[in-house]
Image (cartoon, rainbow, N blue to C red; front, top):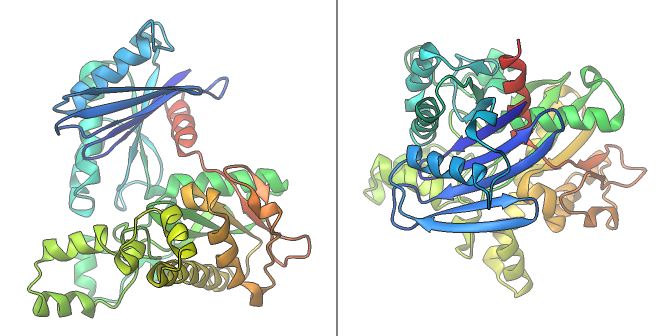
Length: 397
């Protein structure tokens, strides 16, 4: 079965075309700056990369162009759109309505719409992608896969916030967690690698990319995670603040005359590593600045590593132990010094990194020493494969 996996952003549309029978990635790409001047498409087939620039007003036109590339004689990998059997959509926020992936119908669309206040940037874009598929590929099944679904196994005492309970009842303000598809994939993959039943494992997975979250996974279920109501909370990220004293918000509103939108923009786009050092939102640039003696860059990255280690140690409490630590996503898979620095803070737990093993990038590998109390692994994530598998499972029931 050939599955088209879509990840719709407010001005972007990422895609992968996957043959689920052979597990082969046929093509992938990203349409950026949709609705803006000079939108551009990056289309990849194996090692080949093709770029196209054009004006694209909306997601429907973007999807039409993508399908045209996938089926063209020059850049295509399938003979026609009829070869696509189903479409899997990444949906950032499903609230507490969804505990697993679902076939999309009118009721599901309505429930995704009801979650828009919890994800005002992401959910409307996902709905655009869904509606475009229904228009362009009528009759093809669509499946929604939710970032939040994996974390619905958290206990209430772990997801509730200590504010008046009426706001939970009225607005469903609670911890939801994100990157669930990635945490699910990595936890199941490391169980396979170790040759152990996932039901017997206590895993801490560190999904470190532009957005980043830590997850405690016990018996294959999420028991605690760092992100909360929104993807801002938890560890500091490249441009997002992570956890902070709530009074900072009211202090800045009073003393800097900042509006709620100003605060939201600051916490999402001008905080984290970037906010502390002002060098870049890319960890590679931060490390280069550190090598040149930039003290703020050093401070920003050290704070980042410390807070990640703090969450890992905290999750030893949540699960009463840790059997394995995994690193994944862009930073987790590739930044050798970041992984080393995080684990330096965990020496008190007996964690030891092997410098030679730790040189690995974007490959499955053990990076801890043989006598480390907790093995540490790099496991590249594959969220799209999880979405494709869920889509296959639901459309072939």
